Image (cartoon, rainbow, N blue to C red; front, side, top):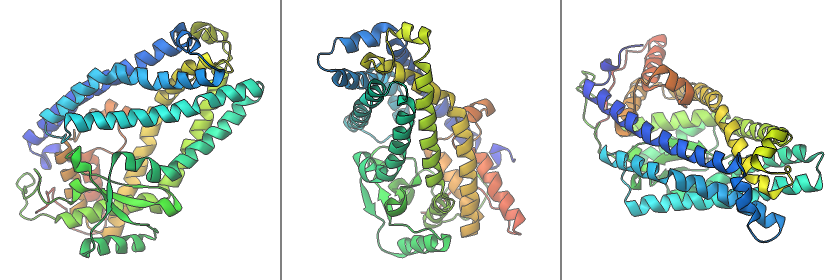
Length: 405
């Protein structure tokens, strides 16, 4: 792999590392505060005491436990989240106002509270009615809920945070729909999301299954301005791919996810993991020391909800590095699909440079950090892979260029 300075100036590398270092510190602080609050409520009697103080039937108290575990960790992490937003503004990657930022967080909290508040009484009810078999029933219901969520999220959840419009009629729209046909991917539509209200970072993604599948492109990717435009000196080149070519490259990547059934696979894996975690939670509730620490009698006790959620969160965090590794493999495969479909490695290299510059990415993060948390190959790895593809197909070595306006 070539050195970072072959594609980025020393100043660009330093800026990305400085931003990511500060953002990581704030993000990890937020995660730590949230986790500590969850542990304090779930692995001690505190959470159980609060829930038992709630008037009403057991279902009301179980739902209250879900609400508590949604709200308390979020509030505990709020100062660090504010620090993260301030860092993003200082470095120019956030375009939110404090009002819009608060609105986004309130919406996210409302969705999380609703979902957890509705879901929390379910395992309690199963444990009360079927004390010997509740784990399998909960696992089956959880897997079904995860699969249903993957199907409905584009219709129900995404519009809570983003506004979507069809990509304007014209040459680009026609090219993208033709690209989908060539990829063998039925796509309901290619939509533009108004992400520029929050961020400068360009992005795109594919979501949904069957009739709900769509490709979404951030409006930040379609714009013709930005720090990378017309900047060809870092790579020493004289020309750059247009924004339209970059959009084609990123949409081809997203079509690769659909063509390889990555969303469907992710749904199946998510459902399986959900079922496994729920089965493990059932086992955890059989550990006397754990029940004693949380002051609960078992899964049928509504006061056990904080314990269930905390242990589930710990199990999910433990699976994080494995999920990241699987994601990196999936993303690398989609990168190759994009190259095979467009046969335009120059645009792919330029795309990764633009994505890194406009999102202030650390183009070559520490290996240990990338292995633990990286959901995509690093920027340098993706650029190197595109150049290797070009070499293997007898094409000229593409330079790291930014797009022209």
